[in-house]
Image (cartoon, rainbow, N blue to C red; front, side, top):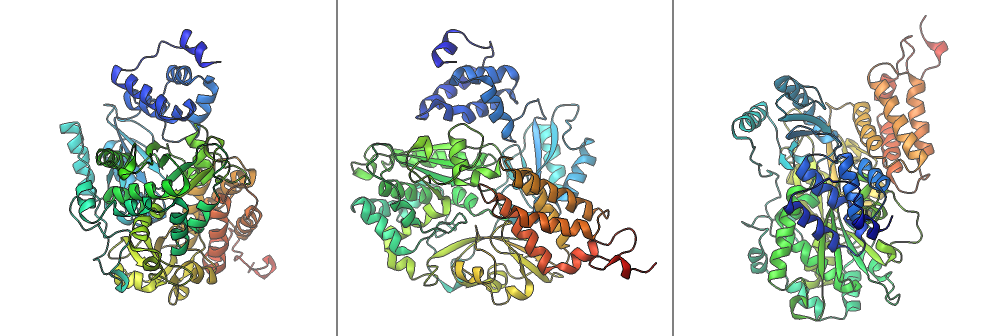
Length: 619
């Protein structure tokens, strides 16, 4: 079916308002390939109608010029698109590990009782719907939820009552500002905070505040250098990707071929979905211009004139903040034609995902940007050579972009002077769990983990004793309390302890958390978020989730416990992307380090203790 055919013979009489039709035309004109407008068009339809009907599927297919089944397969892949009319106010309650420890279970129970509906149901007046979700980048303010797009954190029964009453009396509920701690400007004994320096300033998200603090001077300095000179400066700084993999940023940029006669693209990964991680969210909220300046520097270095920033679907408020910042930057001449008075052009296009953790993987992100399901690609070829629209593409994290202005303004040596020799610079850590001050903290790499807990976070809550720490987001192996005592937060030190720095999502766990329960929570997340492309991941994560649920319910035995471990080992390294490993590694480390809890959970109905030969059991 060609685009010409669909224009002359519409598939449906489905209509949108004139305002929405204008948005559709803008979306179709933004991308080099019209199919990239698929997710934006679905968002426009859902924004007006409340859900995506069969008629809407035909409408979108007609607009883009693809077969309706191709629209339908994408629509049903992403969890945030609705196929039926739901409640006008959707209460999405986070149930990942940090929120579970913070009490999200009682939130759902309370809402069910208060509204008289079960999960997935809609109140008779059409106002309310309750939905458990997995991860909302608000782990430091647990328990928390979203009402439609707006964040509401540190929930209490009084707050929930207030939301419900406000909706019933006013037909709306006011968004609440995040109340996360960001330190006092002297974290870790270092005066320099390359990434969060502006967090304490009033209206830090506005361009006049950013310029007053020296913003966009680094971009001007970069444009005075040859592009290769910018790459060499970033290489010399030792900056490594802050999304989790930790690959040297400048080296990655240098892989881009410049002589293919194709456009070069930069994709910024703001699909922050790793449980325990919420650093990118606060960067986008509090200092979007630092991210924009970093994008401009990186784009110039690699020869890119069109950059994309991919937001996770739940980041509706953050997209609005960022798009306003883009408008401000254009008005000041930092984006558009001839940025900062140079001969270099740059446009930044925002793109909203729709609920798929897998799109945090760089090739799945590219597939999603192309209007497809977020299936990771086999590598090689690597995106630096064959990426978005089969063109050279660099994918970098939000925090990586935010570090660039400091490096270009003050020099690679100043950045190297922070951190350790092998892990230079600072890192943002998202800290959640039973500590007095959870939140986002910027400290030099190499900073002692216990200092993070005691000095930055103010120590554990009264009555809590440290049991374990997940140092780099939910997918990395866990550290016991004993291992934490001399652990340092840098790539090499954590690798020596058998774990990873990852995304810096530090989840603190105390004696009140059972590790089998914690592992089941993670298994539920990874099973839900597996894209299903690779059978070891699709079947393995689901199998582990089902078995752990059985064990936690008291119906398991030692054979089930052992089966979880065997399944995890068979998943390692057997898939296209690391999602399967993201569950397998925690399974192996939790089992190894907290074996007594798994043994206790494996006691079977016959009274045979886990780990013992049946012949040893008492009759």
